[in-house]
Image 1 (cartoon, rainbow, N blue to C red):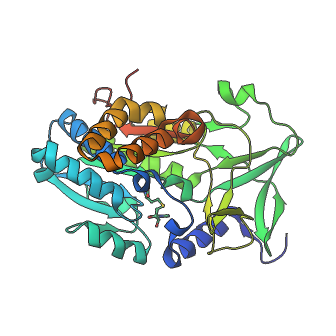
Image 2: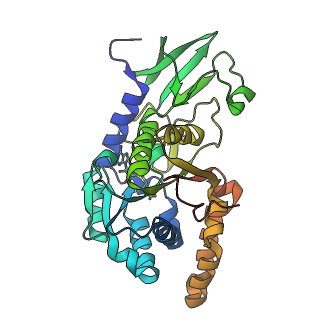
Amino acid sequence: MSGTAERLDAFMARANAAYYANRDPFADFTTAPEITQVFGELLGAWAAVTWQAMGAPDPVVLAEAGPGRGTLMADALRAIRQTAPGFAAALRLHLVETSPGLRTVQAAKLPGAAWHGRIEDLPPGPLLLLANEFLDALPIRQFVRHGTGWAERFVADGVFTEAPGGQPRWPGLTWPSTDAAAAASPLADGDIVEVGEAAHAIAATLAARIARDGGAALFIDYGPEHSAPGDSLQAIMGGKPCDPLANPGSADLTAHVDFAALARAARAAGAAVQGPVPQGVFLARLGLFQRSGALGRSNPARAAGLMHAAQRLAEPDRMGRLFKALAICHPDLPILPGFAA
Ligand code: SAH
C-alpha cells in the first residue's frame, strides 16, 4: 500500500461527489422515471395510500432522496393532486440532494421544495420518503478473504491495493455467520465481500425516526435479495462500462444494494421492513400495465411506447428482477401496496 492509497469508500465518495456535481448523469444512464411517467405516478399513489394508513397526518413530510431531474416527484405530485387532494394539501416537499446543478434542474420542476444535503437534516415529524437509484451511488467498502483472515481494498494510482486486517461488519451480522444465505455460499480464498456502511447508516437513521414519528421510506434499487460474496462495483462513462478506478469524477460509480443487510439495519433500529419484492412484481401490483394501457388509449400515438416502457421496467431479464422495492416503515402500519402476495 503506497502513501497515497485511499480506502475504497473514500475514493467512491470523492469520485461520485465530483461526478454528480459536474456532469449530467443522464447523459450516461437512464432511470425508471425517465423511461415512463407511470413509474412516478404509481409511487405517488403508493405514498397517498400509505399516508391514509398512517392516519392522514397533516402536515406530513414528503421527501425524495437523490431526485435526479425531479421527474419522479413531478409525476408523483401530479397523480397525488388528481387522486388525493387531502394528501396534496398536507404534504411539505423536501428533497435530499448534494449536487448544485441537479438542485437547479429540480427547482424548475418542483416549485416550493426545500433542499437538504443529508437525510439526517430532514425536519422531524411523520415522513414519507421515496428513493430510486439513490443507495447504489453510496460508497462501499470491500474486503478480500485470505485464509481465515481479511484484507481491505484501497485505491492507489488508479489500481487496487490491499491492506491486511480489518473485519467486515454488517448490522446484526458478522461474517461468516449463521445467516442461511451466507452459510449457503461459504467463502473461498480471494472472495470479495462488500459492506455498504453509508446505506446501513441511512437505513438506521430513517428507521429510528420512523419508529418515533411514524411513516415509511420506499427504496427502489438493484441488488440481490440475499447477501452474497462478489465484486459489484461498476462504472459507466459515456453510456459504456469502464474501469471504476481509472476516471474518478468522470464516471458514475455504483454498487449493488445489499437488501438483506439494509433490512437488518432498519429492524435493529426499531422499524419494520416490507420486501424486498422484485420491481416487476411490485409495479405490476401497483397497476403498471393498467395505467400504461389507459394512458395509451387516451393518446394512441404513445400507446406502443408506453407499453414497451412498462415491459422494460417489469420483465425479469430486463429491470424487473434485479431491481427491488423495500419499505422501512412504522411497525403499526399494515402491509403496504405492492408488498402483499
Ligand atoms: N432518483 C433519480 C436519480 C438517480 S441518480 C432517478 O431515478 O432518475 C442519483 C441521485 O442521487 C442524483 O440526484 C445524485 O445527485 C444524488 N446523490 C448521489 N449521492 C448522493 C448523496 N450522497 N447525497 C445526496 N444525494 C446524492
